[in-house]
Image (tube, rainbow, N blue to C red; front, side, top):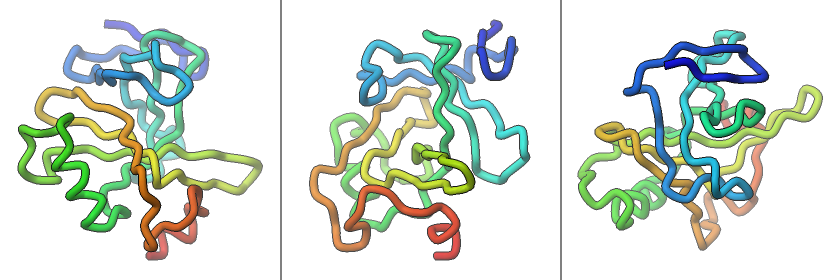
Length: 146
């Protein structure tokens, strides 16, 4: 299949590269089908989450499982969205990035989480801000040093 993107042009993908978000992403509830596009700068663990529903919609994301403390991982694993998952390695966690000039920040409170077994997922909103991440956004270069 071909995905149309205003940012990347036409992208050939297989059906197993389509990810479904039950409720979309905050602010975009009707955009539910996405694919991952590698960052063209070849940055490890950085991707674009390209909407299949809207060619002009793509989110810059960082694969972020390693940045979440265990209590966050446990909360995700115990949620009804992922009740068939027993190990965090069966999930892909992506953190949405915000780029302004050379400053890149990451949102740790609302990751996009996919079940690797069926490519279905949701944007998971943590209702309580834990002491580990008391702020909504963090500078990515600082986070990568952890």
